Image (cartoon, rainbow over all chains, first blue to last red):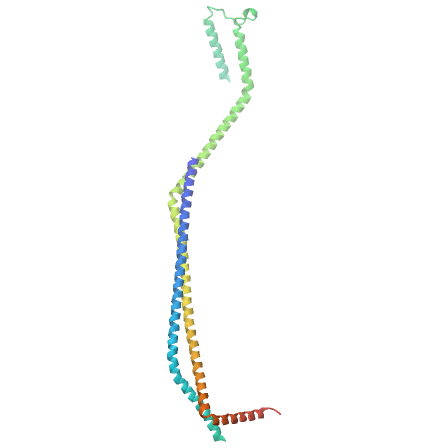
Length: 97
Length: 201
């Protein structure tokens, strides 16, 4: 009777340990899959960020080029304002003298 | 003991009876002693001697024998009880493991479910962290773009001012140099004078 009980106990332990090992392997596999998915999400985000940054830089360069030609007019205007201001001060001074 | 003595008596009586049947041929010596009876020893005395021998033997070994038998009986009883207990334990263990074996599939399913839940929770947590990191990366990228834009704007403004100043200087140097020199000199002198007034003597 005891031997039979021990045999059943050994069978139980063996089957249980086998199932436990299988479940552990499954868990490890799922964990590595989750890690891989996490890395994929991060890589995707980094790639998107990189593309966004590159597109923004390209757009900024174009915009700078466009704005720079427009700003040359502004520069002339500012130059004239400076000269006008200086000359105006001089004229006022001469009048006061 | 009494049974043994009774059995011996019966044996002796039986022997006497069988001897009596052969009395016709030989005369039986029951109580005669001496050299003339050397071919036919006295059966009566032999019987008595044998009975006394048996009585002494029984008397001398009765106690140890009964003690041995009692001990042996106790041992056997104890062994039987232990066997019964072991049997009960074995039956209990067997029943327990039969139940366990029957529920083994459930136990395994429970174990696997537990592991699957653990894995799902870890996966969800990792996905959440990854999503948070993605949002953070995107926000950082947008901030970087905005900062680049601001830097570019400032650089352009500086360029415009620098160019305007340079052009203004160039124009003045080319066209209005002498009057501007005079004006600046006067302005310098005037500033020095006003500054000298403020200095305490």
